[in-house]
Image (cartoon, rainbow, N blue to C red):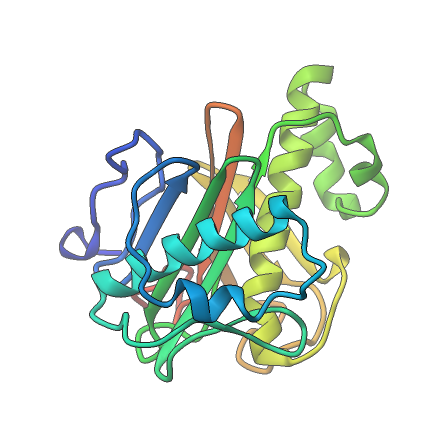
Amino acid sequence: MTEREVEPTTQPNGWEIGPLPHFASLVVKRSGDPYDNRFEDNELALLPSRAVIARRDAFRLGRAAAHEALAAIGRDDKPVTIGDEREPVWPAGVVGSISHAADVAVALVAPAGETPGIGIDVESRRYAPELNQHVPRPEERAWLEEADAEERHDRLLALFSAKEAIFKAFYPRVGRFFGFEAASVQPTEGGFVARLAEDLDPAFPPDRSFSVFCGWSGPYVLSWVILPTTGGVGPDH
């Protein structure tokens, strides 16, 4: 990624979001932040009538983040609807992803011509030992086990978040669900270097790597993936 293509890494609210390429927009919204979503009524109508208040509030905040991110790339021109698997449906020519946890929602978008896939995930810090049974691959366990107990739980949650972001980046491309074992990640400064460990996507064979930003902001861990078009691990290659 070149100097010209990197945006500032910190949002006004203090969130460290990593070095974004110039073409992408990432927005963090917290409960109570002001927003202007002229499509809110249309989007809320897509939720099941039985949706509880907490679900509606999280959905509303996520869509607010999405529209602010879309506005930043000049594409806030229609509602962000819901697909068959409850995934967000973006305007034509846009790829993106939304996530929320507790009182925070995040959205990441970019023009489809700049990247073949985007995924983002935010998780609140919590004790989740059950993840240890399903998330790490054998080659990832050494990184977890070298840490003390408290740090190990944070690393496990970061690993889970990174793989959730990877899933969101690839699911629209492959059109089917796949497990945590389908991606292998190696910790590096600022997150992970990842690769697919299964033949899921012809454009990303197991010997092709890509970057996953992953970092903590207070009690939250944020992970995002912007898939590269060709060549190396960064989104500008």
